[in-house]
Image (cartoon, rainbow, N blue to C red; front, side, top):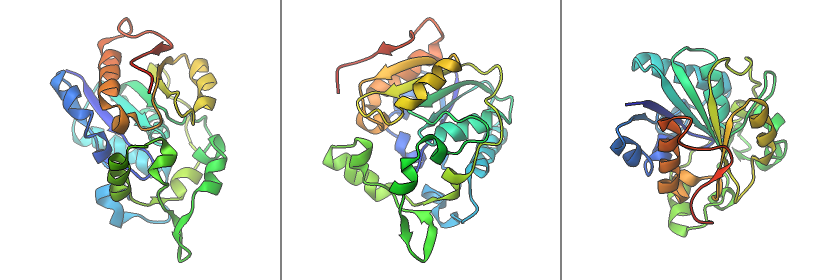
Length: 243
């Protein structure tokens, strides 16, 4: 049994993984999907100074509080920076999986990596300029009306500091990893060279940015193969039918 901790991205919560968790658990894994502070079930706790490192510290506390070791830490989108920062602060992580995620170097923020985000982010109101309203799920590649409605109903605003705050630690040393690139909507194409520089095994999925919503079976099987070991999945392996 492997312990997996799934770290969600911007505006989301642990709820976004609900379609992949059953298959991971059926494969015998211990799966956790916590909400990051200030989001989802803790949306009332959002505050202006809540940033990247508060989120990373929350993940480390979660690992400690649940006595989790040899953890496969999966970070989606913004959650990739959170996962990386957490892995740099604890010895409880044995493998990192970046799911169409940001790969930051020390001193970089999410806005540094994808500069157009700063212009796309809009506050929920002029009175609360530090709290960013969710984007339309269609812009994330979620085209099914029911899926889009579900996301729109569940997504919560995000403190701006999470994307402005720069990573304060280098990538963790000695922690192997995979990078899952969602090529149908190549928002993270710029991360592929970085993944190669870090010797991450790249897995290409024929999906858009939210495969846990749009292609949960494919994502579940991919994560199960990654957990099975280095011989179970190959670099630049395309899986499944074209989306």
